[in-house]
Image (cartoon, rainbow, N blue to C red; front, side, top):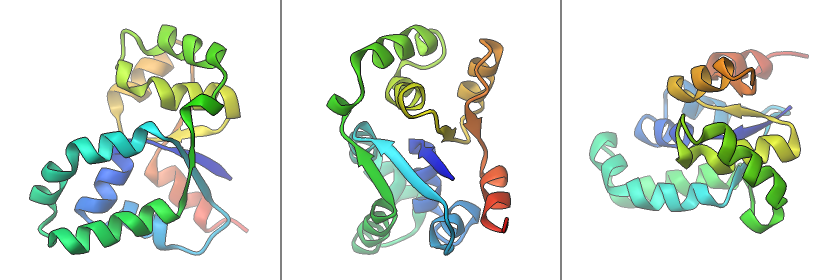
Length: 145
């Protein structure tokens, strides 16, 4: 299974590396993760806030981030056909425009978005898009044979 990793998932893994989300990245499994390049910008923009909430030294937090990013294949924004970006803008414009590249990547690659963003999950479902997967659902996939 391949899942598109939303920014809030990485934030959770960084704030609590031993929590449920952090454990998913550490498990040996057939799960694969992808994310649009935009995720790097979001992490950089929120790094100081993550550092504040994590109770981890800055150097250790950077190591943790590098480990997590080593598990995620980054998809360059220009690799996503523009038609999917335009489609995603229409879908998320009244939910959260910052999720446009995650939804565009979903439209392009057809993989579910791993997120804990209830506003995004519910907003998409209300529009008929059941394209998200939760951490609990991901964890069930870890143990499937």
